[in-house]
Amino acid sequence: MKINFNLHNTVYSCDTSKPIEISIPVMFNSEQPNTYNVDKATANAYEAGDFIGDTRRGGGCNFEEYRIIPHCNGTHTECVGHISLERISVNEILKESFFLSKLITVTPEKATDTIDNYSPDKNENDLIVTRKLLQEKLEETKTHFPDALVIRTLPNDDSKRSRNYMENLPPFFSLEAMEYIRSLNVQHLLIDIPSVDRTFDEGKLSTHHIYWGVEQGSHEVSKKKHSLKTITEMIYVPEKITDGDYLLNIQIPDFVADAAPSRICLFRLMKQG
Image (tube, rainbow, N blue to C red; front, side):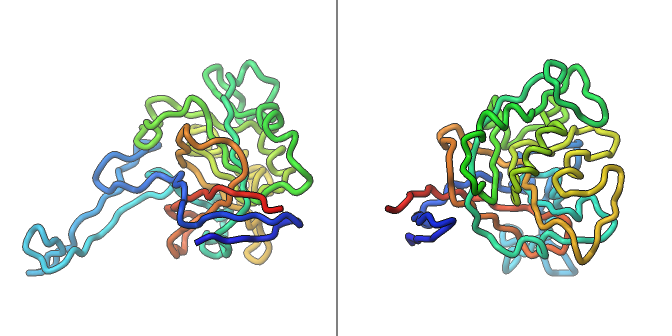
């Protein structure tokens, strides 16, 4: 289906029959990305008495039980409930599913070679996405910044689909970089690494706090008035997809949880007139 829509007095069109998937499918019991060395996402046939939910074992249908840790087993979308005492759910936050987005590509820098900061302090081996890197890609952005920002990091290869991030710790965002993202009023941030924060950060989640506007060190978030922004982590954007503007579609199951596995698609845009 081809659709036309008007945004900020500009008319766009796109073909919804040609999605570009940038999420990593959950391959239960198979290869999948992993962080913190948690158990893999698994699927097992349900068994009760004479019933077995597996047609390969004589059952009349397939009837499986799934086990997954969304934050660690693959592409997932999370909300401010990730850091709050209040149990705020991503299905309450994500009411819309289509957003104008911008895709950019950056090469994280050695943290000690930059003036950007982090909390806790930077380590010699840290790689970070800095404010300067983002500004270089986004300085020409028009007055109305898209609702969503998709960031691909280099190097970029297919191993991101099944990488164990404990073997080589991934890059993360500096405090200044996240302050810059917040200044752009980004509502949906999508990244191809496991977290915007350092893997081992003493539990501070400093850049999560900046993005969601929560005081550092605090977990106090109002149940009635809180950030409606989302972060999607562990996407994979193949090299053949060029930087630029896209229509973004975020799909999640109706989980009452701070995060849920997600399917993410981009659609190429054409300006009309």
